[in-house]
Each structure stands twice: as C-alpha cells, then as structure tokens.
Image (cartoon, rainbow, N blue to C red; front, side):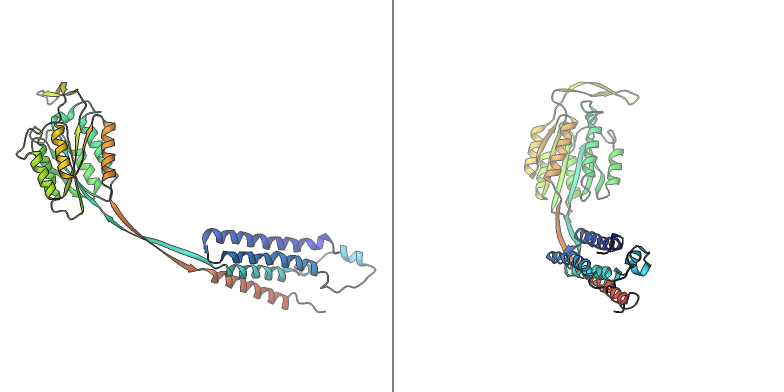
Length: 360
C-alpha cells in the first residue's frame, strides 16, 4: 500500500470533480427544463469508476524490490509524479458532461399576447355650493374628488372623462387615457364656476353626449350628487332613457349624511360662506330609478369610508376584460455541454499520449 502522502492528491482531485459535477447538475436543474431527467442517474458511473481506478492503480505500476525502498518512499515527488492521475480525472469530468448532455437541458422562451377591452367612463360630479358641506373631511367636494382620483389611478387601461355641473353642466375633461391630465383638471375644478343650482339631468345628458359616439362595448357614467334636481332644461329620467338607448349604464351616488349637516346657507361680500346646520335632502328615488332604467346601481355614501367602498364596488362591477394568449418555445441547450465533454476527453487523451506517456 502506498503512503497517504501519495494518495492525497488523487483523492482531492476526484472530490473536486464530484463536487463540480454535482454543482453543475443543481445549476442545470434550476435554470433549464430537463427533457430526460432520469438520465442523471447515469452519473452513478462516475463514483464507480473513481473507486475502480483507486483499486487498480497499484496493479498498473511495475514493482521492483529494493533494499532502499523506504528511502525512496519518503523522498520528494516531482510535479509530473504528483499530477500523473490528471488525465483520468479530466476524462472522468468529460464523461460526466457527456452523461449530462443526455439529460437534454432545454431553455424555455415564454411570451404572451394581451388584448384589452377597455371601458369608457364619464364621471358626472355635482359641484354645487351644497357640496361644500362639512359632514365629510374637509368637505363633501374635496372628499369626492380625492376618492374619484384614486379610482381613476386604479384603472389605467380605461378612457375616463369628467363632467362638472351646478345649475348648468360642461365637460371639464373629455374621454382620455392620459389620467395625469385628467387628475390635474379634477384638482382645478371648483364650485362657483357656473350658475348655482343642481342640474342633475343636464350633468347626465352632457356625459351621455360624450359617450354616444364611443365604439367600446362598455360605456359607463358615474353620477354623483348631494341634492335634488332643481335646475336645467332636461329631467334626469328623460336623460336616463337616452342613456338606455345608447347602451350606457349609469351608477348613481347620493352623497351626504343622514339628518342635518353643516352646510353653506349664505355668502358674505368677501366671498366667504356662512354655514349652518341644514337638513340633507337627496332625491334617492330619482337616483334609484335612473340607475335601474340603465342597468346600473344606486349607492348612498354617508361618509368618506362608505364613498370609497362605493367606488371599490363599481370597480369590481366594471372590470376591464383582458384576453391573454400564452406561448412557449423550448430550445435544446445540450450541445455546449456535449462539446465541453468531448473537449475534456480529447485533452485527457492528448495528455496521456504525450506529457504523461510511460514506457513499460
């Protein structure tokens, strides 16, 4: 039996090869699809061959009996002697790579096509002076604007516009997918820009006019008010019948607490409002009929939390339809592993026939 000193380099090289092959198998498993994963068991040949080589190595060398053998055994080894097992180790690594090539690692290309059916939504919001009531924080109007803008941000694929109404109605922003511009115009809108009053029918009709030429499958109006229709030349139910003809669904929202709320009752010469507690009056029957006639739904929001819930429910009811087609393609990646294994076997053969060649 040769000394442990002679055996150690061989053991270290074999352990290095086994560790490298194990790490490579783990890397392949994580980064590729394996077409023939059962072929990994072929790597069992690597440790078997390693044991066989260690067992056979003594018998492959000629022996000479010398009286000074102990001196030679403890003497220094040159570099060639220490690396004489290198061709076998390289061949073993090459064999391992050839076996892994049989596993057929494959890369996978995935892509998807998306077709989105967007929804056209017009928000018709009451900007009358009563919307400055303090039952919401800081008031009904600002709370309604903030909640609506969050609703807009959550629907990036839809075209959304804004109609503002008091005693009359006008389009603050036409249908657009540029929600940054829409939110900016939302912030700039304020009460008092047009004649006072609450023209619910005019606000609804203006929003319908913006949607009538839309070619989308889903057209929606969100109509928000805190009062009773008391101005304008169009009645809300007449406008609702027009919406029905154009296939527009109207979701109506009544905003305001139940009972009395601190509301503007007069305006001072300096432009400031005088506030007092006033009974909240919302024509819920009219709003419910408008929603029912158009296939929509009526909601009552008595505080900002409930108003957020209203918009969240509308968001669920009017989901943008997305058609997704997924594709995948697999590409064989074993060639590089096969080539590396062949190169290592070639290097092993070349070293054995040249630098490490021995004569019997």
